Length: 116
Image 1 (tube, rainbow, N blue to C red):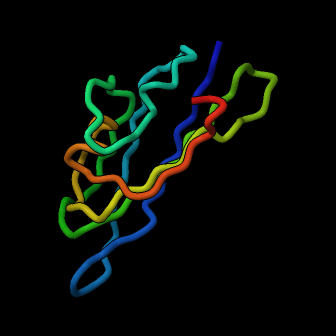
Image 2: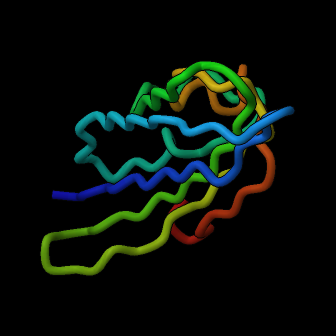
């Protein structure tokens, strides 16, 4: 069975007056197939299934997200890097992976062209 692990980091907070602490909650759906298409993040891409959701509280101020995806082919193999994505600054809120590139604009990203 194929295993996927998603690792999301908040890498920047852009607040006009003062720094603020955020609570971040990541929910990942079960994903046991080899199709990596749902993880292709691109501006204006639609139709991808909801794989994960991120809740950012409080929903005030502006944030920027950086995420990395690693996958593991089987229990005996090691994790391999699949892709990295970054958003542009957006108002802190809860969102799904399907919002990346639509209501949340993407910045730079990289992927392993051999796997995707």
